[in-house]
Amino acid sequence: MKIIKYRNYYLAVSGILTLIAILLWIMWGLNLGIDFTGGSLLEIEYSQDRPSVSEVQSQLADLQLKGLRIQAAGEKGYILRFQDTGEEIHQEVMSKLKGEQTADSGLKIETTGAAKIDVVTDSASAQVIEKKFESIGPSIGTELKTKALYAIIFVVISIIAYIAISFRKVSYPVSSWKYGVAAVIALIHDIFMTVGIFVILGKFLNFEINTPFVAALLTILGYSVNDTIVVFDRIRENLHKYEGEFEEIVEKSIWETMARSINTIVTVELALLALLIFGGGVINDFVMPLLIGIFFGGYSSIFIASQAIVVWQKLDWVLKKSES
Image 1 (cartoon, rainbow, N blue to C red):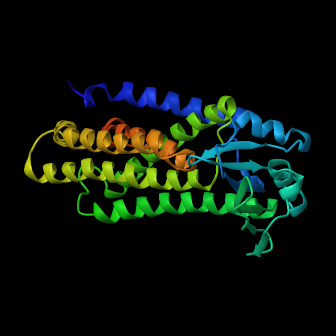
Image 2 (cartoon, rainbow, N blue to C red):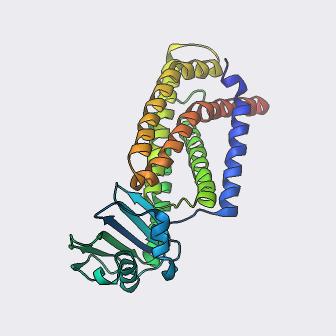
Image 3 (cartoon, one colour):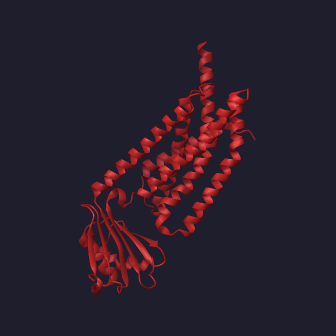
């Protein structure tokens, strides 16, 4: 099977899917969680068997909480997220969950900043034990969104610079900085494909985007460029070892690293799948993007980054021939 031979098909399909992901992002947008929009997070635990999610929703129905999301935490707990903020709303929620008689038992408030309040109850006798309460204002959420964007841009620029320096001695037939750009093209594909899938999940399954998702994206960037550099490094070695067409050397390099790439992806994906199944709902916001993004990271290192280098080399050759 010749991979490089069908490079135009791989690049075309990947480009179309990336474009679809961008269009879905523009049309539907991301379902941003309280980390970026502002809101409250309340973690509770039941001293006995916890009620169902629908029963908790029924208890809180009178409060009409905006954007209420209830997520299982452990065997007896729940994490509640809602857009409403403030200590008054917090106390009303706890009153509904505990019952009016136990709402104020053993309450201790610890202030950790103007926009964030941690509240812990010490009452072991209460049926509902409050473990944590955090309130994030809209201004803090906007700041987090901006910093997350800056972090992603900084990582992408750093990757281009790193690869250009690492491959500075490999200037023929493709300049070293073009390896960096090809790697970033693959990264852009990985990011948009992951984001596009979570736009769909947010639209139909109400999956929220919070800071763990951004951490997962940065991890995906690191994994993807690592896998890409493995292929590029083999290309660099083979350029010194073999003579022949650049396209043939890239093809040989891909197949020499194929088993390593597949084994790594399968191993990581199995570990992430175990975390997704047995790790509980708390880490799903981090594990699910990784599960999807690492798959695309392995795909792009073989079917996008390497193909882009060959296309670039062919284009350079055509331009130089036309100039002469």
